Image 1: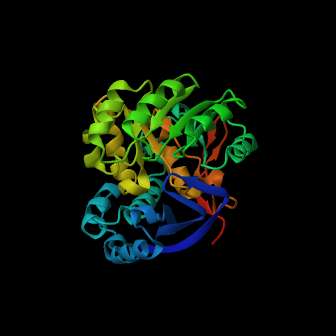
Image 2 (image 1 turned 120 degrees about the horizontal axis):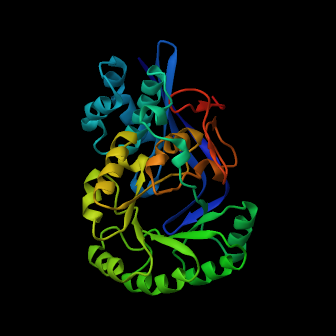
Length: 338
């Protein structure tokens, strides 16, 4: 088994702004595992908010070389457990290796990943298309640029309700809103009343991740379901979110990969919570991986590659009507920019 990895820049079509950061380029790390002419690809993006840089991600990947290349792991779950000491403070790096392991493992089994997991791609929910924070006029322009039946609208401004009311004038599409921790409990409850009348499906992470008392109030009085994001990073967070949120949004990159992501999804389902997987503006490598597990979900946010000015890979093709997977087994994404 041979491990390699490298960084790439992913230029965005538009400046992408959320409540706590803006960016025009997303840095990403691609991991490749090769064995006997078969390869597996994985991906993780960098994120300054979580202190994850290309340097510290690749440093951790280098430290994992011995366990990855030794090849004495029987399946991706075993490799993930073997890497826990190395990756304990860098789940972003572990995600990329775990994803590559799932790709090569399911290829060796002669199956697409969703087939190996016993999932039916016909069950994939429609992804939303995300509109980042901007002036209202520019947000309207972005929405009109991509005609989509379901939009996620990033909020966290002094004019959040005005944004939704303005966008609603231009489309009948369903909205989801994501405040990225920007609101107080009082704001979230008050806003939910008007948002519910504007065909908003749910609110994602309205309060700060540690505002548990506030979330008790929002959970009790909100007119809309609330989905955890920043409050649900790793497996131990799922149960903590029960009774505070109606569902969880699992980010594979933040959780540490497909292996813990699947466990988080199944635990949330066992608690009667809704499940969602979101993206971190990955290329088609990471987005294709998400698509393979999407049949498990109630909601999915896998529009990352659609937000790029230039992709570095080819993989799943997403339209409002269907999701088309690559012909090859495993995750099936392939690099087009080496």
